[in-house]
Length: 464
Ligand code: GLU
Picture 1 (tube, rainbow, N blue to C red):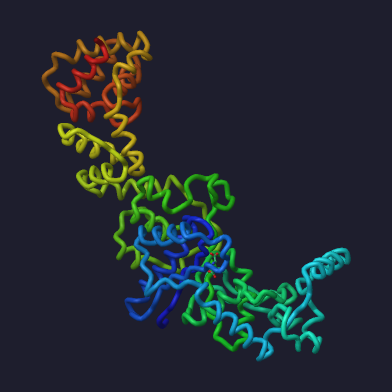
Picture 2: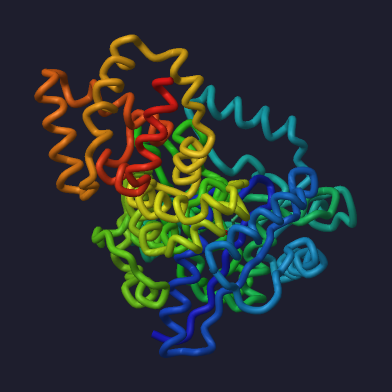
């Protein structure tokens, strides 16, 4: 091993999603780990903004915000691909000069015509421009041409990908792709290679939707006499149905997770292990995540994004946060408004609910439904039977002075037995009145937090 230089190279053409940030995280973790031995290893951020029509500043902001939120720090300034266009053009011309590329004047219609003719003959040839390269007149033209790569026919291209393994394809599978369009603008394929070279990238770690491009980019490096960096193509994330992860499966944009109150460390923990053979769920600090990270354990097959597992890990982290900090977070970012006299009670509720909430949004919902619950409104929709049961329970519990957990539990059980009703017949309306929700923590825990006075007062409000 020696120092490694990686990059994350998103195009700002959409909000950064969870699969994209995983790629960034892997690049970041591998470099952080490598830095312990080789401190001048680097992780760069390059924004590939050459598609001016589809690139937007809000997408750029989402990339930067998402990376910052997850504490994925890059080295140095942010590179913008569009600022380097002259260099890309220069390299395309250099390739012409050293005969690693050629001028082509084929029109789109001509190429399409050839493609159709080939198909009729049962051929799916990738190289549709075969005349221009050998035509000296075309190669002498001064304008109205595009520049295409030269790829040696009847040979093979082999890539030894760090995740996908050795893959060999016939060069017939590769087209003579365009480097510089007729209007003089460079293509993605050219810009990526030139930038990676100039930034000294040693490892290209990205989604496996770019694996095909690697075979093409390989020839650019070769034709230019540049060292081909190491490639590692990470399998994309799938949803629980085995299809590519998309909005249909739930939140996928990184900042959606932030808005829902997922914790950045929990997301990092989940993503660092995602698709690897390491499957232990535990709360880890960033340092430990870096230490544990094992690039070689990333599996080749696509893995499924498991919201339940993320929820589980997130709740582990949520439990580690102290109640005051959570209250501050709820007030500052989740619009929770509480009266001063309720602060102590809410802190106790936070303590109770954080154990059963997957994220802060859920915690907030529980606390808000507690605060905003209108007992009088519930009374209007509750059944006569519920009223009868709660009335009897009120009489039963009103004289109880031992408000210990054991005694409350004993009372609840005895009441249900004596009245020969199911536990849920009491628990659901009672929990509703006490917390604003039929489901939730155990009644005894809630009744202890509310103490006798508040418990009785709430039931009374319902009965009068
Ligand atoms: N800009 C490309 C994308 O957002 C990534 C290019 C690369 O990593 O080589 O998909």
